[in-house]
Image (cartoon, rainbow, N blue to C red; front, side, top):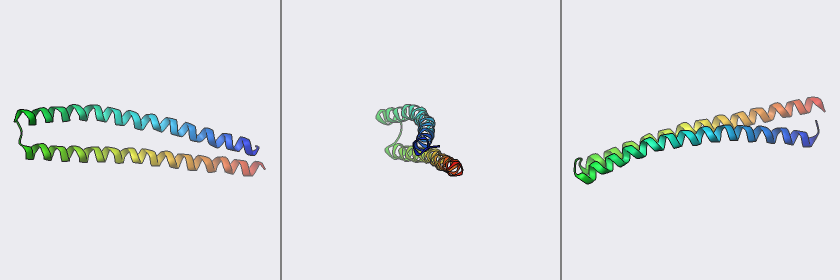
Length: 101
């Protein structure tokens, strides 16, 4: 395996992992936000109509913020797993490269 082939193999690994995980994170965030936006719109409409108090509205907003924060932390774990997959894969490729030379 030449240096160029090594670079190509690592580059392909990174592209594959990023593509796979980008879609996973993007789809998860999109699905999450669609549901939450509808809920926030209903909450806002109730507040505007005077059906809920300002305090309750603010409390619900804080709960929504915390739920979104937790969802983003889940996506951070997906990104961390992707990074670990890239690191491990890169060193597997390097190990094969060193044994071949």
